[in-house]
Amino acid sequence: MRRAGSENSGPSRASKAAMEPESLYNLLHLPGKEDPPAEEELSQGEKRKFLPPTSRNNPKFEELQKVLMEWINAELLPEHIVVRSLEEDIFDGLILHHLFQKLSGLKLDVEEIALTAASQRRKLAAVLESVDQSLQLEEPQAKWSMESIFNKDLLATLHLLVALAKRFQPDLPLPTNVQVEVITMERTKSGLKSEKSVEQLTECGADKDQPSKDVFDELFKLAPEKVNAVKEAIVKFVNQELDRLGLSVQNLDTQFADGVILLLLIGQLEGFFLHLKEFYLTPSSPAEMLHNVTLALELLKEEGLLSYPVNPEDIVNKDAKSTLRVLYSLFRKHKLKESTDGVPQRSPN
Image (tube, rainbow, N blue to C red; front, side, top):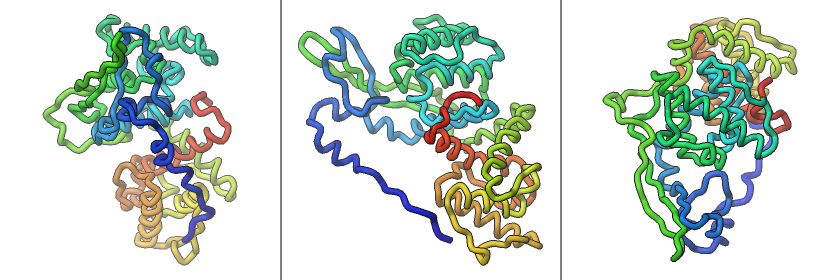
């Protein structure tokens, strides 16, 4: 097996960092911005929170973002909406609009596409007003605001999404007791003033050491009526790719059991050339089927696509949840790639 083509790793970030002057801001990683803001960006008496790198690299903080993102993508999968960054994809109200409508069953009277900053602010404000009413929150109680979400404040965005998850999907396995250190910057008459504090994002829980489930555990358990819609979206994606090989899939539960179509799909999407001696094109026994599926899962692991352990025997035994989990890992990656190649990433199909 060999990989088709090669990719350049791109310019090193270290060279850029070396050119930046040493200052207090160099200790901070600012959401959605490449360079730290100048002092004049803070008005007199204004306070703003920032996350230092140690907080961003906190494993539980990263896990919280991952769980929330996979939950959102699973909810919006039938609408062909894909989120890849909570900072960059939530701020304008489009994703939040679709997510809240899906979770609450309410139809919001807001414009579908807002292109200007002013219209995005109006839309976001209207959506947040409905969210706060649904959560029964008064504005001072909320740990987010229209301005903080629109300014891509990751902490505010996470507080908002955690509150939605607790309200509409309380069994979602959010990591417990997620705490991060934040630095609050304030512009005073004498200059910039900084203060450290700890922000609590999720509650403590007695079951915090219990292994977390993935979104498909929750889908099959809490929303079995949505499983067919998810299957249809994934089958459509798979057939778009397999059409180039003259193949198609009608039954997602059974046609991936021998590993052949799965291997061909991975080869097509990931650019692998698979020699016939590496797998069984027409497997005639469970052992040969297991060999094919095991090889497919190894390829996915090498590419970093499997975020949840999958037993190859479950695929061979036609376990729908395991099959969906594997195919979704490909769907998630290549829907994003399709978006960057010219298809609007967050517009519903």
